[in-house]
Length: 514
Ligand code: ATP
Image (cartoon, rainbow, N blue to C red; front, side, top):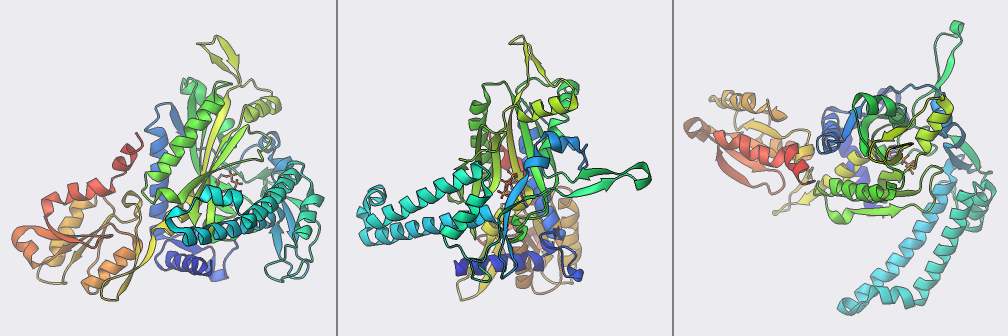
């Protein structure tokens, strides 16, 4: 674990050193859980967003996009349930004065037991070798059975308390499990209280009477309240979807793990409107499509898993997370929810406007049911960064730090490097840049030795380096160096475009989703 913490720290400092992510307001000592994206970060982020957007709107003819405002009528948040129920249970440690989410403290305790079980299994697998039967071991080993029983009982009690919104019971679990504050090491806990995560501000001058408005905690409601507009003006027929990318804000109690949990972040959400009764079929379909979207990036299928929810939100009849193996464990990157007709019905009730769909095939009107896919851009960014980062040992004892970014997501696609800064090589290199830049994000770099320049491009994940040398002037060939293998091949300038395009184009990635 300590080793993983180290790796994570290195990734965070790499992200800063190479212009991916900066702490917000850094010259004023930062603002907790708020981050800025730098010159490379913004490109990577835009590429992630483009991949998602195109996969939704280009590949599905029944999905269209919108861009709704962050400010919305405050009654929307009453209707959606956020004013009354968008809460996290918080608890303070009196000695360290640190604040925690009570549910997270208990989830961490459950994860600790899971770790113990995993360790027993790993030990036995090593001992028995080939002959090891994991299922049988788990079903018969007394120590594993003891841990499992403890885990199940704790999990059951926790789920019950969460379902009942029983804050006293949550506190009691923390006491009974003897959970200590990681900072003070004591069990001196306060009561558990509910804390609403929405940021509130005022709109309008006070002379006119200001109105309290919220910064949206999710983009989804902007889609729901535009359902009728889009359905009517786009002549959409069910099933159809509306996609949106935009900022969301949550006053998170415990903001940690870099850009994993931020107070200002970005979401990519798609609401898919379906016939009542068909929602679970579509839920299953979207679960499958979304995992495929992640896996197409080629970061390793073993890094993903589904986590089906046992405790469902008040509006949902099925929910699952797609989790990614971060250096600090498997964590939610995307949520897929079957939200029933809760939101549209609520808006119908609170606005007094009829929000129905007339289904010409059934010859009846109904309130559509909704499948939602909701992914955080920043969490996706973090998963890509963590998976890409490597301190690679090279033959000869050298190491290089390289980002094996999926090529279509890389901020820079190719760098053109004149071997020396004279003899007409810079001019020739510029010619190549001037041709490639219309299709690919292309860098020109002439400073420092070539090896150093390669390493700098490796560190930001540039898939290709093109080196212009004296031979180039004679025969119009260059060396094309590939980031991951570091292989160099001599190629014709005329072939560069096709060679690069095959690897870095978003369309090749999208084709994998067919
Ligand atoms: P968590 O349980 O981690 O708080 P959540 O279940 O509340 O997340 P959702 O409301 O389902 O999250 O939001 C959908 C997606 O938005 C999440 O899967 C995540 O990628 C992203 N997200 C949510 N909260 C944050 C945050 N504070 N910072 C960054 N991304 C977030």
